[in-house]
Image 1 (tube, rainbow, N blue to C red):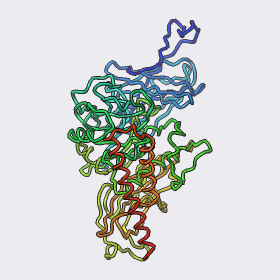
Image 2 (cartoon, helix red, strand yellow):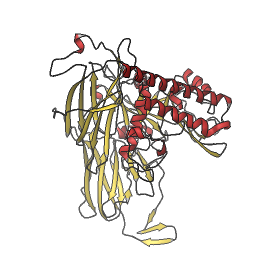
Image 3 (cartoon, rainbow, N blue to C red):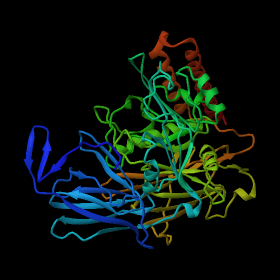
Image 4 (cartoon, rainbow, N blue to C red):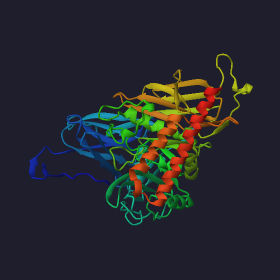
Length: 565
């Protein structure tokens, strides 16, 4: 069994802990298997074992087959939020459990319904326990394949973790530094050697690219100086560079075919990166979004501007919905400035109490066949949808996310009948295991609620379809968003990448408040660091400020022209 957990040793009915020996009832061995409900075939899956007598007490399993593998994940916080599970290969498992009542829950990503069974040890244990997982949607069959771009898990055992999560792609870190004076080649926090084989396969459709790096900059030369985090995905050789400045890293990484992922929108320097070409992807769900709970309620919340309308407590705290909406609106503002960042998802699993792939990005493969290079190309192009549970399908003008639609608002094709109205025809379809709270079309960052029709005959517990038309008299973008809610009241969402709409001779303009906000973020960084910025770094920050300043002036000018008409 792989993983790092606190060790407790059982011997002759005694448990050995720090400070002495304590008498306990001997543990009983529970055996079981996890299978597909339809075929009965064994499945790789995650197993969670919780004591019903003390829900804070979690237990771990191991493989009952010498050919099997069990990978432990055990992350617990002082506030009670915990992610404790075992990723199991498709082999029988066993667990040693003291007398008591337990709930065993098997999961396999978002496309299967969890399977749970309550048992009492030792009086009524089935022998063996069987947990049958039923699939409610098959995204691969429809040509959609999932990924998690932020992975802190070791490469050893990662094939089993991928299969147990039914996650098609991930990017474990081979390089990681947290000081802006450090290079990954000299101060790497990852102990594993640099990978020789970059692409590794669990099977034909579950793979990971092993050469990736994170610059997560909290300090400079050991002194507190937070900047932010930047993921460099799918490069090949180690990056012997510190940042900032970013230009040498951009050049080196681009030469290796790498992508840049903006890991969290609220880091101090985050809004610098897109404006200077150091971001391809924007994490709509990131490593503060966990299935087990929402635990980061106050972290740079002072950056939230009033125009976003996000409620904050007197102490600056926000709830989970506020955190998600803050991220969405940052992304919308960047899109409105013409920065076509594709949406991504990264859990940072390995650091926080979150399982790999809880937040995931699905990339559409038009030929419905998985290919890693095509998947990465589709991720960058925005042929995608991000989710923490529900599945959302969307077209605008019969175009899928990531596409560009040429639109003439004066043409007859742009005009529907009286009932439909005028504009770009939009179709949304959602399938979810949780109740649907709201289905929205997002037009240049503005959410417009859709009237939900359905159900649509899907295998999901909840489903709906909506059609509408979106009038556009100038260039812009259209996307879709859905909110669902768990039985505990937690929000779950899905958000598509945009379809970009081009109207000849009528360019898109950002909103003045958005451009002013982005500019203020960059100007605050320049003022905060002052003379501590190197000449090269200051020039990059000033370049970003000038970009947003031009966008602000453009927005103000467009507003005046509109008023004058």
